[in-house]
Image (cartoon, rainbow over all chains, first blue to last red; front, top):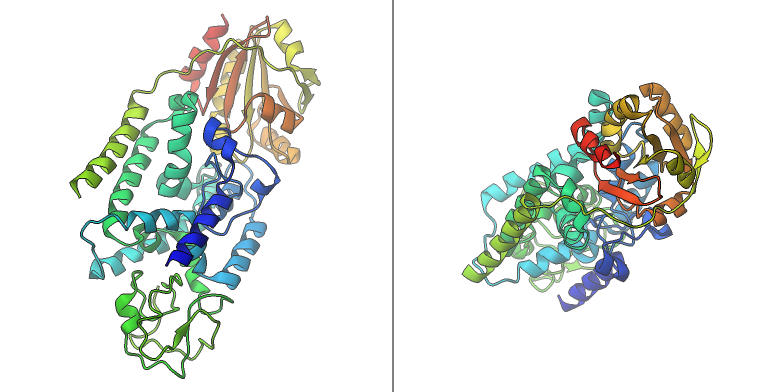
Length: 284
Length: 163
C-alpha cells in the first residue's frame, strides 16, 4: 500500500507540478499542456502540466467547429493497452484524493447491492462524454463539454476552487452552475469518507473505458488460471467490488494478493483469457 | 466523525457563499499592452492604433469555446448599435484560422475579427480563460475587464464604462 501511495503521490505531483500556478492562479500553457495525462486531471487546475483526456475529448468536439479527436483516442488506447485500470489505482490524482479521504475514520459502507446499480451510471457518463458535445453541436450549433461543465467533481476541486481563491476576477462569471458543481463536489467528498472511491465506481467514464481493456493490458493484477480455485477470497476483500482479481472493476491496488490462498494473483501479466468468473463473467 | 462532516459542510457552504456573494470585477487602471492585429475580415491594425481613434472593445474568443460562440451574436448586436462610437476587435485565438473564418462566414458576422501573435496576446492579456473582454480608453488605459460570456444587457453595461 505504501508503495502504491508513493507512486500515486509522484504521479499527482508530476501532473500538477506547475508551482507558480498554485501561487498566482495562472494556468501553465507550455508544450506539455497539449499532451494528455493518463488519469483524470483537470486542464484548468493551476498546477496542471498536462491535459485531461476526458476534457480533451470533449473539447475537440465543442464549439462551432467540432473535430474528431483522433489524437486523444490514440492516447486513450495506448494508456488502456499498457495499463488498463492500473491507471486508476496507481496514477490518477483524483484516485489519490479518494484513497486519502477514505482513511478518515468514519463508518464504512461496503458491498451494498445498490452500489452495483449505481455503477451503471458510468455508462451514461461515458455516453455523455463520448457524444454529448457533438449532439449538442447538432442540436444547437455549439458543442459543449457536458461532463466537464455539469458533472466532473475533479474539475471543481482541482480547477474551480483554486481559481476562485486565486483569481477573484473570476467570481463575476461564476453562477448557479458553479453552485451546483460545488454542491456535487461536497456530496462526493462526504461520500469518499464512507465509500471507497465513489466517483471511480459510480461516475467516472475514464475508469469504465480503461476497465474494458483490463484483461488485455500489459501491466496489472492477473490471476494464474492454473492455480486459481475460484474461492472468491479476492472478491471478498476487493474495495472496488470486483468479482475476481483483474476484472473490469479491478484497479490493481493489490489488496487481494495476500488474501489469495493459492498465490494465484500477481502483478505479472499472465494468461488471463482462461480465467472464468464464477459469478457469471466480469461485468461492468 | 462530526468534525469531518462539519469540515466538509463548511467547504460546501464556502463554495456556495463565494459564488453568491461574488463582487463585480475590479476596474484595472493599468495600461493596455499593444499588439499587432491581423485582420480576417478587415484591415490589419494595432491595439493602440484602434484605441487611439475611439474607445476599443476587445473580445478574445475561439471557435472551440462554447461560451465564446454563444455570446458572439450579442457582440455583433452591440457592434451594430455602438460601432460608430467604439472600435470593436474580436480577436480569435484559434490556431486554425480557417476554422474561425468558416465560423464568421457561416454566422454572417460583420464585426471586425482579428488574429495575431497568440503567445504574446496570451501572455499580455492573461488569456487563461476565454471569452475575455477588455475595454480600452482612448488614453490606452484598461477601463474594464471581464472573463466569461455576456448577454446583450451585460455587454451594454460593460460598454457603458467607455462613455
